[in-house]
Image (tube, rainbow, N blue to C red; front, side, top):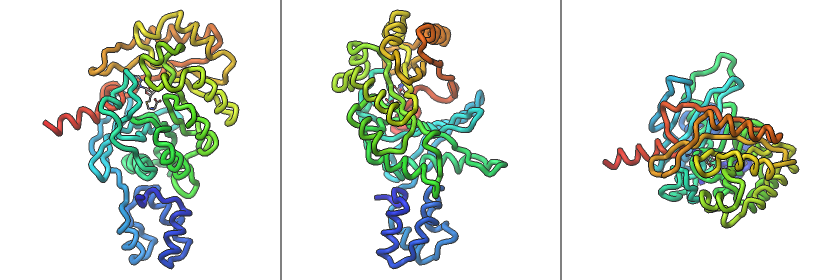
Length: 347
Ligand code: SAH
């Protein structure tokens, strides 16, 4: 376990085993939530800092960074202690900044349109490493005049399948929402899943109640199984049932991600069929013109076509929006910067 994986309770136990006072736990936790190394924990006695330094930290560093001249979006390539890398993206909105972060190095879900899964799953990220993505981005931003946080919202939509790294993701959500640490409200957090149905039920019991996003991308089993292998295991109706249960339990609407793929799921008939599938659910559809991945032979539709699809859904009383395009000048689809960097480093 990394030091950054420790909750306040874990730290209290550790301190007790060292005969150190329990009140230090909160101080240490606050530092860890900011990505501060033990040697720089200024209100902690030197002897205790030395003991903490002996525990592997689980540090996350910014390896590369691209800033969009167009909208200020920042794409980060984070490196971890073992040299593995993951991506994160900081997006600026009127209400605050959202960090999109990764939960695994690579992914084993095998979706046909996604760059993150091309080489499978390398490993899970630990809770502390996910926290490290947040603190690294926070430290990288200039301090705000109002003293508030730079990173106010999180989406677990970078590489990896959050519910395939269930325990660490739940632990991370507890750490990052803790008022003694980063204190990000669960209301400001979205977790996106490809639809691992039993884990959705576990998630609603065990995790803070965040917004659940479900990557749907099709309204029928045939199409969905073709582009998302997980659908062979958990068919679409079971996914929708779990999503409805989540929204009932948490009182929050579920967001369905729907990447529009030309010739696959983007026709008017598709919109009508999707609308009738979702009828009566407390939900919202987020339309994304597919981001083309060079390694994948699928093409997206235009933004104009995406707005047309949105209209078709709205005519059937399904609330929908087209996702804003951000940082198109600095990144490709999810997973591409990491692939490109690893490729260049190998050259
Ligand atoms: N594994 C989780 C979260 C990571 S993917 C999930 O499946 O939801 C984040 C979102 O990006 C998902 O909705 C995913 O389907 C979508 N995505 C992946 N590749 C994409 C691409 N090339 N274009 C558009 N969206 C893509």
